[in-house]
Length: 211
Picture (cartoon, rainbow, N blue to C red):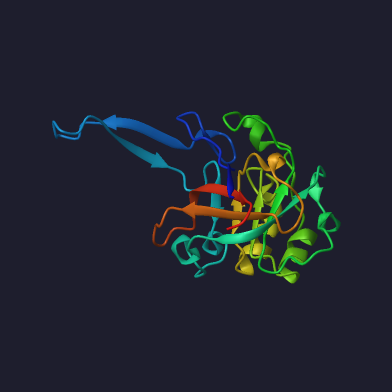
């Protein structure tokens, strides 16, 4: 029997874009011009808003866009760390080849506040290189970014992971409800199929039990 856990943050008209200084979505009702249509909405949406996926194109010119990634369905491993810069030693000594590695940092700041974008844990370059060398297929984290909010650093972990073709899913939630035991968990996320785009909001879910 399968159990499905939603790992996706709710988007609202108050959701903020990285780095937290402007709204990331505009939602408005429009007149459909058809008496049989009760209501329709138009949204202007930041592709890196809320729970979202970064495609390699986000940092690597000419690399895969979001449509090239398909719908990733991977066996998943949850790694729990409360360190500000998550080190490579946080990874368990188990095979990671072909897996989605989900980093649970217990980041619970309100995503509609500036505080969500300040002081969060991030992936150290050392950890990013270790994830590449051990064959991780996807990396997820419950913070707004895999790198710290410091433009001077140049987002090294994004460049390492995306340069190796490993997509990053940021802004996950509910990772604390997942078992960290290997072999019991699957991860999937569903990006919008937008040609030539470097990222997309996703509906991210975990499955426990037998597929």
